[in-house]
Image (cartoon, rainbow, N blue to C red):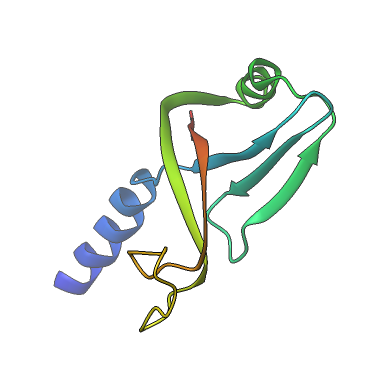
Amino acid sequence: MKIILFVFFFFVFIPKVHSQEWVIVDIVNQNSKELSVMIDDGGEKINRKKIKNPSIVNLINEYQNNGFTLEKVTSGIELDINGNIPLSSNNRGNNFGFSNLTFSNNNRIMLWFKKE
């Protein structure tokens, strides 16, 4: 009898529990011709896509037309440091010992969509 009740509750209550579907759109680059985005839809691979229409508003409207709602907009800064740091500096004009460093920062916007 206990097994029958367990099987009954398993098939009646478990299917009603549902998970939410999220899509994270990371806007990597925007210029006057195109919009470069990385799309994480929870799959195995993050898709990289270039959109010819560089409007973020049109991108949001496209996802909203597909049944998603925009939950959050976050921004982050990606810092890249390229070059080498010598252990000892022989150049007297270079007080800090950094000979060849390049700093670049990329501001990124992430759009968080939830399926309704």
